[in-house]
Image (tube, rainbow, N blue to C red; front, top):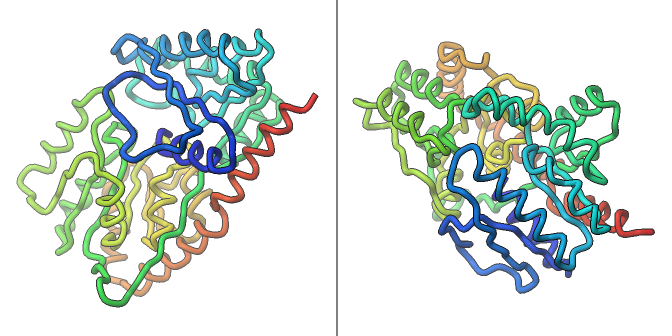
Length: 345
């Protein structure tokens, strides 16, 4: 979500929009200069798993009442609870729903109940509601009988060379947060059963609770071909996608996975759990396995290792699909058009 918001804000700024982003003062900074018309406002909060985001969203919503802003855009279900507040001062509000957050295993029963309540607030509190997938759009419209706008995530399509400097596709790759719903444990078990020549690279940092990341290292112990580089920068991520033979996303909970789109844009054959959110993006470009079934995943990975031509064909279809359906120009046009429509009397 953070990457999607960053890239969207930069492109809106390039079109002349003034962007204000509310941030948590956790010590992180942008790894490259931002456009001049993007301003960051840091709002303090408690550094706790359950209250940190809630308090930050509340204080940011109160702060925005007193600054010049035409539209206030909330990201995700939880912050949508406060999307009525800026409307009290005449501002228009938008909420983007990225996933069914209450399904994530990190939440306790109270937090899960609150996030389910926020399904209602995300639809009825703002002026407009956006979903990043058609699957989410269908879910919310059938549940609440209120129209939502579909505006997906987007990716750029990098140049892929097979000339001098061409990188051999020699790794199996996963990128993303190391949290239970991503089911990276399923991938490690499948890989350990095959033990192919190529390395398994699991790129990403832990979520708010590092226990699952430690658990993954435990079940990978003894296999030095399983690599954990941690969080990686843009340059290293680019290198990993160029080296990937297949990209595996075993996640059981997604909205519109940007990592899947990124891998597809590099022409990498995707292997994903058979869930609607992944199937919507990848279509016939991906190979699917039963969610949580490491035996089925093992068999699918092995079949692709044994059939490099099939893998290459899937990768080419994936790249074309990403380039045609998830272009930045169309996404920014749709978002800017929505903002303009809200500003009209």
